[in-house]
Image (cartoon, rainbow, N blue to C red; front, side, top):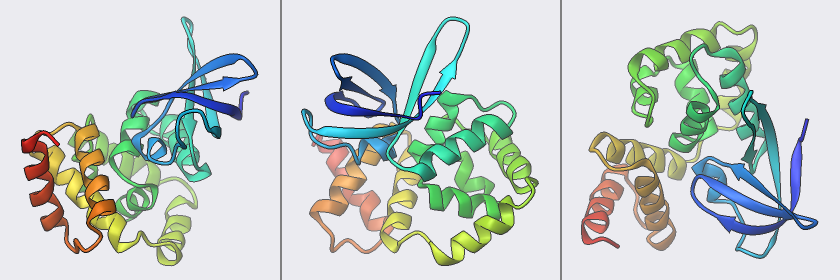
Length: 204
């Protein structure tokens, strides 16, 4: 099992990164949440990994935090019908803390807004993960002590709203994050959505 790769970041896209490890380039598929945390091209980076073995390929999935990788593995190993690609979509569409809160609260509506996730799959996620021994209790405790920040909640709500309006997940995520960085005075998800719509429409 390859548990991490450490080297120089050679290339980065919202869906994948290439890391030079002693002259060998490793292509690693990543969620948007990890893409946001990558350093500049040419800088040193360490990415936690999960190796998925298929008959026709060995694919590395990468994460910038243990929580992301743990959630990825939980989805792939415990929810029927969810493979690595859909698990990445979940991580790209919602923060780990918000996802845990949605499962604990049975919030199927929020989960089903994630790109690629329908209502039936969202219901299955809630059912199968809440029934896991100790998961719900542990997440309830975690939600109380590590609740998502107001900024994270606003970003998630705005991104899901934009996706529901038909915009691509990558574009929605990037625009909302950029707005939060450049205009920290924005205090509501509604305002984020309005400004994001203007920016996307203007092609900026």
